[in-house]
Length: 186
Image (cartoon, rainbow, N blue to C red):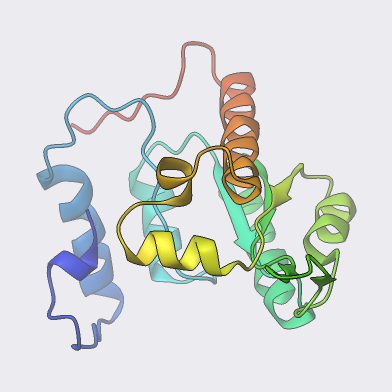
């Protein structure tokens, strides 16, 4: 489910707090999710209404914080860690997205946005570092085509980054709950 399904492609979603909170409630209470093992909610960066509302109205198993390695993005990560700790949501770890670019022709690795920012932040705040996702044309192309890299090219190095990340998240979830994650909405 995505907000993209509810608004025209070129329309901005300009909502204040109460509208955001209402949309999150409707998303959780009105969508027939069926029997799901994991529900992953992708939120914008920050500690605003969307994040706080979700923490308040849903029994969250935990949070995964995704960032890019540059210092400016890491400011939001530090605030996110603080917010999740204050609302007693376990932090499963940090992921570094767009961690590096490997030239498809010569395989030279370039750290366009810096290097190691997510790992050092994870170490500083004593949360797990879950892995790196590269900045890669193959990832963008397969995602834009609607066939994510783990489906279209599951043995590729880029797919292996996602599979390792997923494995690390599953381990973190499993170690944090007794019988697996449950989301109960009454």
